[in-house]
Structures are given as structure tokens and as C-alpha cells.
Length: 299
Image 1: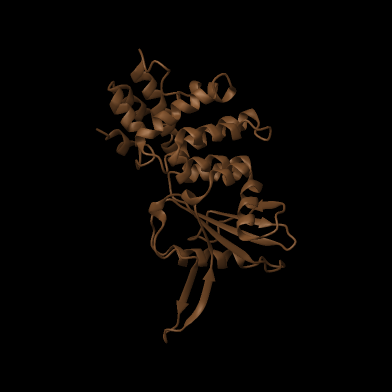
Image 2: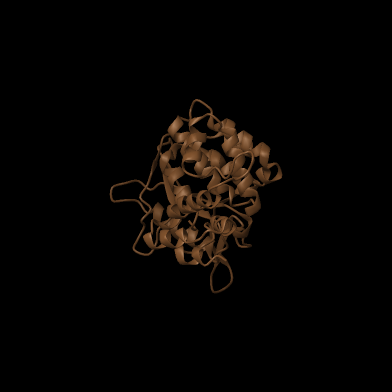
């Protein structure tokens, strides 16, 4: 799972594995049922993203990989993980493993991700055929994602449909978070994850209006108060007034610390930056920056 989205996706899956198992099982045509997360530390050199065991009947394993950028040789890696996950523990019965790769953005859609991987012998005749499922997130419907479990809702803001009508997408996302199956504390977290994942398809200039719209949507609610308290509300109706640089700095520190961790040295460096526009440019680069040093080098 490629950074910087791995922490977000892992948190969403870990919060409610059944949401994701049900979504993937439906895509694979498998019967829904109770699901448990499996240990994906397959060996010293191999670790898959996530794996779920469906209790069945019949029992099965769903192997999930997530890609946000282009990588060569993904199908071969999927096969390797599939085989390792399918190797039964001592005394356990062998169970089928269904592999799904979720592509978070178009850049990850390389030519060899065809849903079928074959290996040929020295004579050129294929001796192995491995089938897997490819889900291209930008092609997913918002309705389908919003109709699933709550932890699938943030992905709706990373679809092409959301880019086509961003105000409507934000309104629908907010409405999903108001449903009874989303407790207040979970609602706040999902709002934050939605803001992060929106960066997959939206241009940087669209992210700030999205933040504004989210704060307006949650006016008077616990979610709005959380966003405002954490400094994610970019501005009020009249725009940023006094303390504009400090507000931008708080936003930047909050988001950057989630990715790079706290750093007294970085905090001191940020404290010396008074150019609000530069701080905002840095905030928009957090997802792409490699580390604090890279981020602080933003002109």
C-alpha cells in the first residue's frame, strides 16, 4: 500500500473490517458473512496490505492490495502473496484466496493490470493462469460507496463522479455521515479521512474550497467543531482576517504531523515562516512530500 494513503486506508479498514469484507465479497460474488482480519506478515520479505477470512459457508480468504502510483510487476507480486496466504496452517484446511487490487488513482492504472496474469514455459506455452479483480476507485459510483458501511464513505470523495460536481459530492458525503449508524466520534474521524482522500483526484486549488464546504456543512455539529478546533477550517465567510499565518501554520502542523510525526526542529522552522501563501503551498504539498525536510524546502 503506497504512502501517504496507507495510514488512512489501514485506519479505515481496521476500524470496521466487516464494512470492507462485505464490499469486496459483493464485488467477488461471494456470500457475505462475519469476517476477521488475518495476519499479513507472510515472511521476512513479503507483507501484503490486508487479508480477510470470511467464515462462510463456504469459508474463503479475500486478499486486498491498494495501489496509488504506478509500479512494475504488480501482478506477479499479487500471485506471490496469494500463494503465501493460501498456504494452510498445520492442521487447517486449505481455503480459496481471492485477490483484489484497488487502484486509488489513474496514475496507478498500468497496462499489465488486466485481471489475468499468465506464466509461460520455455516453449512459450502458458503453464499458469492467475485471475484477480481490479477495482479502479475513480470509476466507482458515489452511490455504491455511500450505500456501504460507514468506513467506505470517505472513498466517495476520491471518485471521478465527485470531481464532476464537488459541491454535490461534499453534500452527499456529509449526509451519509449523519446517518444513525455513524456515532459522533466516528463521524468526526471519517470527515478527516474524507478530506485526506479527496486529494487523490482533486486539484490542490479545489482542496481548500472543499475544506470550507465541509466546515459549512457541519455548522453547529460535533464534526464542525472538531474541524474548527483542529485548524482545518480554512477560513470564514469573510475570508481570513488577523492571525491568517498562524491559522495556516496550525493546519500545516496538524496534517504534516499525521504523516511525518512530531518534530521540534520542524516546529521551530515553521514558527519562523510568516508568509501565509507559502504555508498554504506547504500544506497542499504534504501528501507529495517525502519528509519534513522536503516539505520545508517548499518555496
